[in-house]
Length: 99
Image (tube, rainbow, N blue to C red; front, side, top):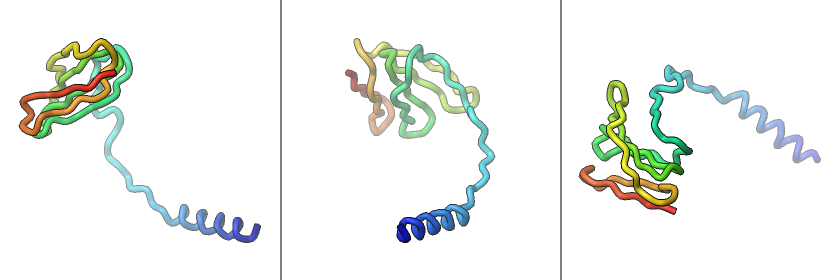
């Protein structure tokens, strides 16, 4: 029992010493609308200019990440949920995996 009390006191002491950095970000930074069901994955293109998202609605959406985060288009990808999307190294192609 004494060991448990000692560990508890040490944990409390560590928690009191922790400082949480203040962030200037406010949620949401960008609201991306389009998916009709849950999103399972988001991947940035290699150059960081585009975002691909996929999920339970069986589609892949593409977004421009600058300015207004414009929706560039949607591609129906699978008969079931799209579990993952990946970009090629040069960013000219994308690949999906489905259930």
